[in-house]
Structure formats: structure tokens, C-alpha cells
Amino acid sequence: MLSKSVLAFCLILITLGTLCPLFEIGRAEDIATVYIDPPLITGLAIGDNFTININVANISHLAGWEIQLFYSSHVLNAFALAEGPFLKSVGNTFFPIFPPLGIDNNYNSTHGRVYMTCAILGKTTGNSGTGTLANVTFQIVTAGYSTLVMPEDTTKLLDNTSGNPQPIPHTIINGIVVVVGADIAITEIQLPRTVVNATVMAINVTAANLGNFTASFSVTLYYDSNEIATQAVADLGPSSSRLLTFTWNTTLIPKGNYTISAYAPPVIGENNVANNRLVDGWVVVTILGDVTGDGRVDILDIFVVAKAFGSKRGEPRYDPNADLDNNGEVNILDIFKVAKEFGKKDP
Image (cartoon, rainbow, N blue to C red):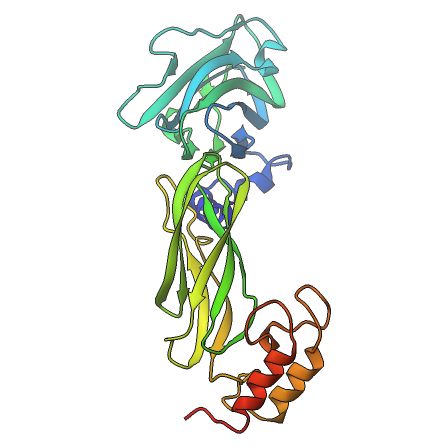
């Protein structure tokens, strides 16, 4: 369900500078890195909870830190905050949670904020290496995506080895959460035949719900840009599909080659619309008796019907194009129809 969406989100990640630095974590670099782990969170539904770690890598003598984390409050709500083990593993720490510190899901009209600070108590050289500074737990409140951003101007890492706290240069790797909501799709079109001769043809279309919510929508079948029919799909549950059978009366359709497609208009909250349309196959509308679709009735048509003679739908020799009366078997009536029109050409 994420093909187009994943591409868009990756572009966002690149814009935020969050992909390339991932490959730097764990290298022996001089610069410290503060990063969200995992950086890309997918596969969640509304109501799910998840926890991120705010980690530090390649740090030397960290004695204190301050971080503000911003997120879309329309998509996420934070509800739990805890200190990680990195600093408290080397001494007693001060990790306060009182306003304005802590969680504020209504920081402004669009974003929530988690404001965190921590310091080792007493005289210490701090801790070096890689580890977790804090954990934040969120709940999904609606479908969409939310960046998890730690602005550089609000992120502080401190070295207190000299007794006078000094900032530690660092880079930041932000994160993103992708929540799939509505996603309907046309997954298959089944054409029983590719040549029709002024007859009625049944076309099967499979509609699917790839999202997390029950969806109601419509599906329209087309030949080229012309509508054949529309059917309603009511209350299709998540991860399920439904087979729709359309009836196409080609009696009054001008002769020619036509492309068959099906389309389902997007539903509310749907971001991935690339799979809402499926173009799958073509049909030749031609004169009666023309089984091969070349615009004439000749020995080739007799041969095709004769080859399938005596077969029924579902059997290996059955050819739906040779079943001129569309009754599920190729018999003498089909031979008769071709023989009666023998020698005719499409004007």
C-alpha cells in the first residue's frame, strides 16, 4: 500500500537530511550525532502505540543535554516519557518533568512538543560512546505522516570536564512516522474474450481495500474513455477484496479496438491513488463470424472454431472467442454462425 507514498516520504526524509547521516552512525568520526531510532516507522494503524529512542553516538564526556522534539499533533499524541540509561549508568542524574518540560500535545495549532533535559549530578567527566538518552511513547490518532524533528537550535549537548559547561558540536538525524489510512485499489480485470461480435460480455473486476479502515466506494468500468457501467462497493473491510461482474452489451458499439480499464475514485483520507485505476487488456469489436478479429470471415475463423469444437468453458481446448453465442461451449451452432457469414468483410 506504500509504493507512491514511500517515495514521497523518502523525499521528505532526504529534505530533512535524515537518510544520508544514517550511514555515518557507528563510524569513528569526531562529530557526535543525536538521532531518532528507528528513523522511519511504518505499518501502524490508528490506536497503535509505539516507542522511539533518542540516541547519541560518537559522544565524548557528555554530562548534560537538552532536547525538544516536535511532531504533528493531528497524527500523533505523546503520552509517556522516560530517561534512557546513557547518563544514569555513570552516576545520579537530574531528569525533571514539569512545565514547560515534559509532554505538550497542544504546543500550537499543528504540533506537539516533548521538552527534555538531563544532567549528571556532582563533579564528573560524563559518559562517552553511544547510547540512549530518552524514550518517548506515542499513540496514533489518525492516518497520515508526521515528522519527528529535533531542531538544531534547541538541542544542546554539554561537556563539563573543565568545570565550566561547554557545548559539544553535533549533528542531528530526525525521523518520520507513516500511518496508512484509506487505500482502495483495482487489482484485477478478467476479460473472458478478446473478440466480440455484437454480443453481451461479462467482465470481472476485483476491487480491494488495502487500508486499515472499512471503506465504501464505487468502481466504473470503461472501454477507452467511454463508461460501460458503475457499481457500488459497500462496507469493504480492511485487507479484503470483492469481485464485481460487469455486463457489456457490444451490440451498438462501433467496430474497432478498445482498451478496457476500471477506476475507483479516491475515498476520504486516501493518499496513495496510483492503484485506483487499472488498465488491463483490449477487446476487438468486429463483424459477426470474425473469430480472429482481423475484420473478415474466412478459413482462419472456421479453423479456430473447428479446433475448439466440442469443448466447454474451463476445458483446455475451450476458446471463448470461438463461442459465438457465449453459451459456454463450442458446438455446431458456432460453426453454423461462422459458415453463414463466410466471405464477409468489415466495410
